[in-house]
Structures are given as C-alpha cells and as structure tokens.
Length: 160
Image (cartoon, rainbow, N blue to C red; front, side):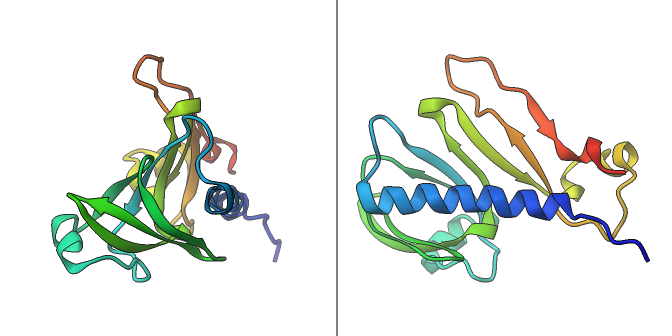
C-alpha cells in the first residue's frame, strides 16, 4: 500500500504553530504598534472554555477581538488562556488552537482561515476529495476596510 504525504494536516499544524508563536510573543511583550487580532473560534469545541452565558449567546462561534484590553494571556502547546472584557465584565477563556477557524491581524492585512471540506459546496466536485479527507487549509490575505480583498489560495487544487 502506497503512503501519501498528508499536506493538508501538515499545513494546519504549521499555521497553528504560527498562531502559537504570535500569541507567545504577545504574552511576553504585549501587542506591538497597531497590531490587533480578530480570532473566530468554534464554541462547540469540547476543550473550549467560556462562561455559560457567553456560550448561550454564541452557541456555534464567536469572534474575539484582542486589541486594547486583555489580561492573563498564557499560551500552552494546545491553546491559550486569556481574559477579555465583555460589556465591562472580564471573562476568562481558554481557546484551543484547533478551535480557531480564522486568525486576522488587519493592521498588516494578514489572515489565516481554516476551512473544512464540507464548508465548500463544490469542494468534492473540484478536488475529487473523498470522505476520508480531513480539513483542508485555506490561506488568504485578510481584507482591510480600505483595501481590496486578497487572493484565496486553496491547497485542494494541488491534491490528486
């Protein structure tokens, strides 16, 4: 049986390592300059920790803004803990890296998006992807308010 290189999962691992490194630097040094993050998270992830009232308000996903006020940022191999302000109420969260669907730093027009095979209506038709395929990463430039949207590069078109 021929073995295949699982580029999709390798790319996901690399992208999550990048997020981990960025968050480690922010935990150590703070946010430099005008950098800030919009991080969309799957709130149904079993390791996601958040207050019950937040989970009720955001039962599927939440986009977190890490910019002016955050506290207690601690990063481990699997995710990060942070306290964010929701309506003047500080709330501790734990975000597993594999619960992140988008990570955007609009100050430098940078973004990562993790997309499931099932998220695209024609993913199977275009790529011949089978039921055994896992998530396929998508890389894109994050759209800035004043800039044009960046090009989306799908690794699916390189799969056989």
